[in-house]
Image (cartoon, helix red, strand yellow):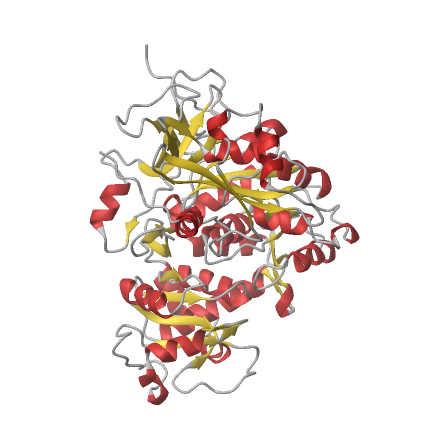
Length: 579
């Protein structure tokens, strides 16, 4: 009997194996980002494209295009050529999206640098990919970006913009800092963004000339993956990768030009720049940035004031919005859709988002930077029980399969294994690292995600954890996600994370970190009593700690390895050696 592979969303014939293929009825886009955006502008030049609330700026599609072309012209005037790398080190603002559009227009590779990076990390990132120009925020809260750069390159104090020389940053020739219309003191050797933009010409014929030479398969973006060990790797993505992913993400949300999407997630990550910006641009919708960094109150205010129809976020963001003391003051009735992604969503949180925030058509997305990023997504009409318990089905023009981590064999529906993705979304590769690329992408083009997942007979995928997160206690395989979902049911639990810690007798034991809801009280005995008779004894956490927050990345991904390390230090535990 031949392998059963789903060819629709969801499968119409029950799957015999955990291998599904997305629909192909809508063709892939074979244009560059610049060409596609220009065509959208021609269709609706006066429609609102961007609202940057904290900056007090609004752009029509035509105005955004004019400034993007002007910036592209200015970048070419700096001597940059297609294929050169240009960095952006900033939180969310209009300058960020102008850089995204301008670099794509003339084939420059935009390098997204995490705003949480400090001196050694930014030095590594800039040098790893050879950035020639960097656009950066001057400062943000306690982060002094220009101060960090000057610490790395004191020589710039006597340098000239466009001709910088520094021993520790040998490739970087130009640093541009984001100013507000000429405000702020001069920075020796550095250039203001407003001055750079003023040097460009929106009608510069070179922009169109360079654009005509570009291919959809050209690399256009580098994103550093936040690895838990070793140095970050630069996932290199093409126009084709991220433009198509943004389009099909928007299709799942049923976006139209009438939609106004509130984007509080960071642009430096795929969530903001692809699931946010590109999903909007491919559907003629309006982008709304509530603030430069996440703040739940400004999100609620912005949704109300701008009458947003969509809202993105990771679960911790939605929890912060729902639990804000002023939540009930705001009219969120215009909301319809959005995406929750970044980490598994507690079922109870999803139900509150649908009922209390009017997000009846919110979708769940799953992916990774190396796959541009989304592989699976629910749609607006996915039954709610599937939206709260799965990450949906495979995206169009992609394949996903679940394989046994050791044998590589495709498993039966319902069995857990490693999720693998193949298709247009798989990255070009890790920048200048063929060995790591070959480890991640096999000879048949499958990207191995490292995530443990199951697929049911209808093709719905559920992420059950990371292969490295799975806890083996006395020979029993335990998935922390299952225990987290159970503990979320306790009325006093706001958030919970479960990890494995070393144990001399069982190899590993379970540890739960719990955040208690404001005004509630909880202790270890109460949590254990709640578990008794409800889950198997070996799934009841041995260690329970009550905390105010979890260690996490800027994008809201919980760093479980830091929880594990903290508990090892606190309890004096040593890793157990395995044969």
